[in-house]
Image (tube, rainbow, N blue to C red):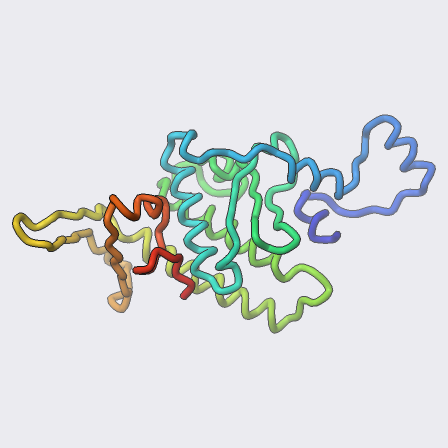
Length: 230
């Protein structure tokens, strides 16, 4: 319950039954469970229908981070039109789905929520947004009576490692793919960021569009079409 109240951006306070009934009768208070129920029932946003790159990047990169982490490899993510509900993120009971407020798909609202400067490059806002949402998801996974300092530290280390992998990806600029005329070869080129570590490993997986078109929205895929978990 404490992490739900925290997710609502509120602090808990004990009320007498009389005061609760008075506030309740005038619609001035709601339980955390009721807020969660409204969030669960909010309509899911179709990212493709939004038509702007920021939302697509946040969605694809967050999915990639979740699928690349062993703790969240089987967890999917959707964004919901939750309106003025203060709840920002919620994980299902069995951790198979994470719901996130659609406000995070807006550059302006994400920038304001994160307290960032409004003149940042969009890629920078994408990085900070995905970093925050991935970290918050891991925090939900540790919430509860069974959480421990050791488990918390282990997940924080995984979050830091994922942040670095995310940076490495975003530093691959102007990726271009060309087919070699008359030969079954592909040439890939991209600009090298001077801040990128020389030890960065880039894996390229090729699939035929005729048989693997369903993978177009995935960043991490293995040669058998399954998401990578390492």
